[in-house]
Structure formats: structure tokens, C-alpha cells
Length: 362
Image 1 (cartoon, rainbow, N blue to C red):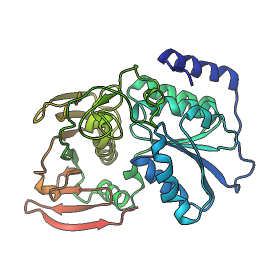
Image 2 (image 1 turned 90 degrees about the vertical axis):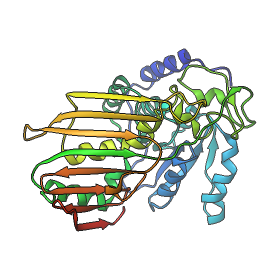
Image 3 (image 1 turned 30 degrees about the vertical axis):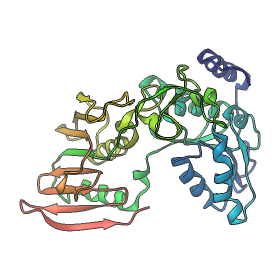
Image 4 (image 1 turned 180 degrees about the vertical axis):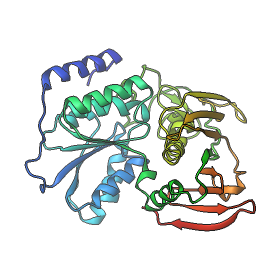
């Protein structure tokens, strides 16, 4: 295929909105088998494949990724060795969207593709499950909502904590007053160890990787190679490059921020401040690896609520059991910790007596 520029992507999206006009559901009856295409089949994409394959009324019909080197191992891991029909494989997501037999799209691409792929899928008459973060900014988020409404599509934004039975129970008990009637603060922590990604220099992308499609709507840049493997971007270090990722605030912290707002029962902050920088390593990361952010909200009762997020290496949060990520809620009679994706612990009084815990997962 020819070179794709940012203008080509914008023109393509505009043309699709004119050509498609209206859309209709591509499966005839509610009990028909839903055919899903997974976009992005490394990292989170593997979880998407596994999750859909576990649903009896769903068929993973297509795997799509700009890196064709992933096709053989993914097809073998999830289909061939399990004696299941093998899906189609495709590097270009536009060809997947043209497939009338695909009912829904599951998006696990790098972050910079999330919003445009969602909009295109809606225009093509597909329902969408899209990984966090859905967008890079508020404008993109509004356009995703407009597309879902205009084309009558179901779009679900994936923040996995919401599906955990243990988490759901914990938030319910929090709101019922388990640690007091006045829950005034939520502290989010992300203390994952992120080592140096090395220095990069322009080079050739590995055979099998369509670098043009991988970049998609982002500004065109040369592929950067280093001594860490395939390069600065593929398949994980892109999280720390502004054009493609959001650092650990958008990679891990988004889960904790979502849970904190959920527990506090708040929406948009009326005041926020954030400070951060680059520490420990002189490498190719562009996005700060250490940061501290604070947010102030008005609760439903009119009282102020505070939320903080701290991102840095090293685990030093004893109150949450030394976890590398999690949320801690503080109330008038104790505190609750949600130290992973699966559940909670509640502590009461000044002595911090453990009064309840549950890790059901989900």
C-alpha cells in the first residue's frame, strides 16, 4: 500500500461519514453468533482474544496487527493448539472494517489509535470495546461520543476494575459507611518499576512490521532502534513517547483514578495541579517517570473531596500492603485499601484494626 499521511487519515474519516451515512446491525437476530475482530494482538490484545474465546456466542473471526510476526504465535496459542477454527489475519485495520461479516471490534492497539479506530468502527456499523485510555484529549472523547450516537453503536470503554466482584462490593460498602459517613480523600499510587529503555537512533523497522500503519494518525517519525530489542516503540516502550502514549498516568494510573472517582462519587474536579520530571535514567523516554497530582472535587453532599495520584519507582505504601499500584480511601472512622484488581481491605479506628476483606476478583 502507499504512504499514509495524517491528512489521508482525516480525509478517510470524513469520507466514511459521508459514504456510510446510516448503519444497521450486521447480525440478524440476538441469538446469532457475534463475530469479533481484535485490533492489536500483543499485551492487552492477548487478554481480549482469551476473553472473547471464552464466550459461547462469540467467534474471534479476525486478528489484526501491523506486526505480522505476531500472527503465527497468536493463532497457534489461542486456536490451533486448542483445535479451534483459525481466524483471518490482517495488518491493515481499514480492511477489517470493510468486512461485512464482522459485527464488533475490540481495540487493544497503542493509545494513539484508540479514538480514531473507535470512530471508524462506528462509521462502519461495528460495535466497539476499546481499551483505556479512550482518547488523548477531551476533543477526541467528544467525537467518539458523537460517532456512537450518530451511528447507533454500542461503545464500551474498558476499565477492568469496574468488572471485579470484589471491587464492586468494596465500593458499595464504602458508600454504605464502612469507614465512616465522611469519606474525604482517595490516594492513588503507581509504584511500578520502569527501567531504562535505552537511547534510540533512526533505523529500519523489523521485517514484518508495517511502521506506516503502526504510526497511523500520529505525526510521521523515523523508526528508532536501540539495544533493548526491536526498538524504542515496539511493543511496549511507546507508552513513554508523547505521540503514542501517556506514561504511567494513562497506562496504569487511569485504573486507580477511575476507581477513586467511583468511590468518592465525584465527576469533574474544580481544581487540579500536577508536577513531574525525569529521574534516575538518561534514556529515550519523553514522558515523566515521576509525578505527583492533586485534584479537588465537590461531593454530592457539597463537601470537598480530595484525590491524589503519585507515580514513581519503588513501593513504600505500607498501609496498602506494599502494593505497586492501588487506591486508598480515607474516612471519618478508618480507611480502605484496594491493592490490586480483585478486592479490598477495610481498617477501623486509630489502631487500624482489620475489620473486613474480600478478594473475589472478577
